[in-house]
Length: 228
Image (cartoon, rainbow, N blue to C red; front, side, top):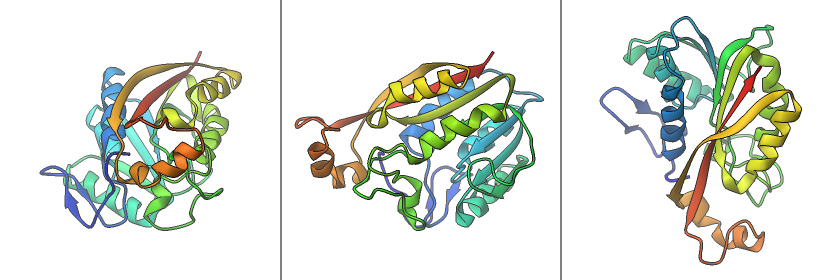
């Protein structure tokens, strides 16, 4: 991660991040660029899992999609609703884990920027800001669940776009999605300097062999998986 959300900060003239909510960062921007490459979304049904401030959900709505978004944090839900209203975009935002309340719906496109930072604690926190990024020892606590549950949310020819760190196993993600019947590939990569979260636990990451002794950058990847 490149930065950490701090108390109410203005990210642009129309996008806000409330205290305790994950602010748009390098991973958000990378996923946003890949989302734009999907082309016009007019009439498509899109779900964002873990919407945070709602930046990507609002972008999808601006591209013409019918957008639903979920987040486990009530603050994130309120922030995403606020940002959608401020930018005059219609986004249905609900509190929920992964896809939210079960309703059997499927989607043309699912986008997600889940927690993925490896952490000394075996389980992710149940509350607080760190819930937006800490994801267990290998960083895969939420990523694995998305790989397991998202294929059932996709319509024929539906697409999943997910961003995460190279530290938590790109090939593992690709393998899980392929075994679930999807075609999966890396759609984009970017290298960014370690931010406060990663920098604050570099000693532990190096002890685990996740980061080399002279390494100062993290690789971000966007996985694109499609149902054929």
